[in-house]
Image 1: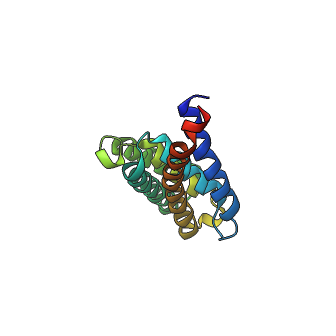
Image 2 (image 1 turned 90 degrees about the horizontal axis):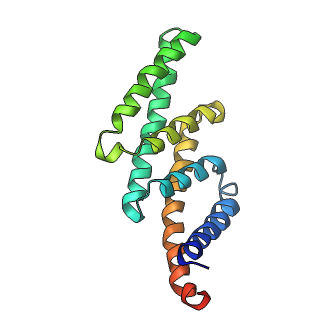
Image 3 (image 1 turned 90 degrees about the vertical axis):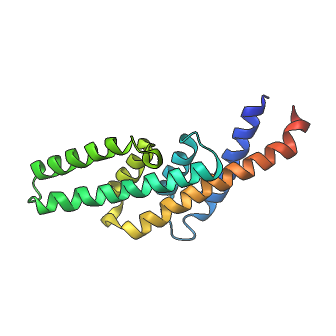
Length: 156
């Protein structure tokens, strides 16, 4: 087995055990947490920089989704109003990609689509689940590395 595969298997095992086993038990939304954990790993940044990028971008996404929904309601709630509100805020999201700490646009979209998929648009529960997913991503990265350091030399 190559080293990268061993490291990846370690982080995957920790993710599955921690998130799959405990998210529902503590009242969080598992799919939102997994989305945030995935966003952490997809930033291609590790440890605290990836953690903060995930938090900033997913929270911006939740905020943009909330603004889209509110804007569409203010404009009358029609399909055209939703189209206009979404179009305006998607342009803003893309522009946010030009700023260093919001430059990970897929993270913004993770936060955005997560609110749209959330039953009753429960923002507090979504925010907690996304934050927990970012924490989990960081923890899995650290624990995966620790498992790799401890066991990889013996396997390879």
